[in-house]
Structures are given as structure tokens and as C-alpha cells.
Length: 313
Image 1 (tube, rainbow, N blue to C red):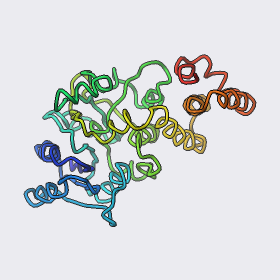
Image 2: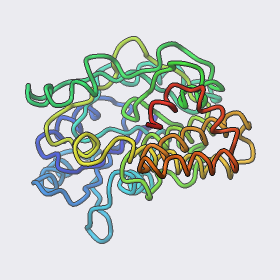
Image 3: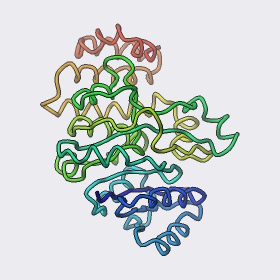
Image 4: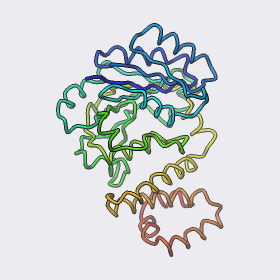
């Protein structure tokens, strides 16, 4: 195996060395691609030192040296990657020694196009734990049991009860089918949740198989200045970011002729629920009335869905 590990770097001078060295412990890791996204701290200098120290570490920035966010930054990493397999790692997270144990066996089968595993959590400080424990807890982020690849896409959409989630840190993808079937890679229109949208489409187009689900293969490092968690929990209401996410998913799904109608309906319902949730109270009734006329199926089915009702009012 020749694995390219892509690490977007932003405001992570304290953590990126640990991330890089956790990837370099594996002989299967062919290259570590750092893409620095105009960090406000000293991360760029740390990345330069890592690239000088390790032959397998390659450093890139956007052509304009600007800040573009995690999605475009991962896309640049994908453009530069030359390995047969792709793995991702956030700069403040790290791999555990068992990270690619399942992959080494599963990828011997050519029909396996991706493998996902479980993510653990580590709080870098007590303050970070107080701030974000309600979001991450101490549980594994994982799909709860092994599923057939055809069930992963509807499972990620949570169509049939609690399926669980997998993290991009714990995903390994065969590069050739991803490049062939998935374009664009990460949506540049999403500042947040672009990894969730990517995983939705990826799980539809590629056959993804479960790896190690009962213990962590990588760890999410949580600290006070996490870019995504800070924005998601403090500056923007969750419904605001989710309506943007589901708008993107809905636009894609309605244009993809091969997606079954029941799945398209579920996606529209999710989009409608968050969209209505953001509207002022008086406008909500107008939107519900309009959708009862123009999209009766999604509203009717939504009224039987507890998540839909929760976000309406």
C-alpha cells in the first residue's frame, strides 16, 4: 500500500507535529501532505521545519497564500496526492498504532473501495473538556455494527434509526475510484460540514467497508481554539449550518437520477425542517403552507418524524 495522508493546517502550531509523526509511524504511509491555510499562529514555520526534517512530508499552500477553509484546503491536498490510497487527518488529531491494521487486509480485495473505523477523543485541557464535552463526550464516533456497503449511504442519512457516524480521520479511500466517481471532492460552498457532505456522496458512489469499530484507530484532539467546534458551538446556531449542509445535499440528490425516490424524499424533508426552523414564527406558517402545496410528500412525512417536529418550532 502507498497511502497519502492529507493534513489541512490552520492554527495548529502546538499540535501538527504530533499529527505528522503519528502518520509517519506507518511504513504504508507514502507521503504526508501538509496544506497550510494562512494560519494566524506559527503553524507555517512548524510545517516548514517538518518538511525539512522528514523526506515523506510535503508542504503546500494555496497559490494566493490566502485562507480558504478546510474544504478547498483538502481539495488542494487531493490534487497533490500521488499515493494509491488516500487518508485524512486534522492537524490537531492523531493516529493510533492500529490505524491501518484493517486496511492492510481488506484492501487485498479489489472490490473494497474504502474502509472506515472508530474515532476516540482526547481533551487537551480541563477547560476544553468543560467547553466541548457535551458535543463529543467520551464515546467512540463510529458506526455501531458492521453493515453491507449498500446500506452505508442510507445509514449515514439516519433513515432507519441510529446507525452511527464515521469520521474522516478514520477513513481510507482507494484513490482511483474516488477520482473517477466523485467530483467535485469537497464542496467549496460550505465553510462548515463539508466533510459530512463529502461522506454522504462518497458513501453513495463507493463501496465502503467497516474496519475496526470497537476501539479507536485515531483520536480527535479537542482544545479551546478548535476552528470547527468553536464556530459551530459559539458563533452560528447549529440549525444555520445544517440548513446549508442539507441544501447542498438536497441539490445534489435531486440532480442524481439514480438515487431512489424514498431517499430523495428523506433528504428533502431534512432540508425543509432546518429551513423552516430558521424562519421567523409568522413566516414558518407561510413556508409550511407553500410546501404543503408544492411538496406535500416531504411535509406530510416530516410531521411523523420527531427530528422534523423538533426543529419546526
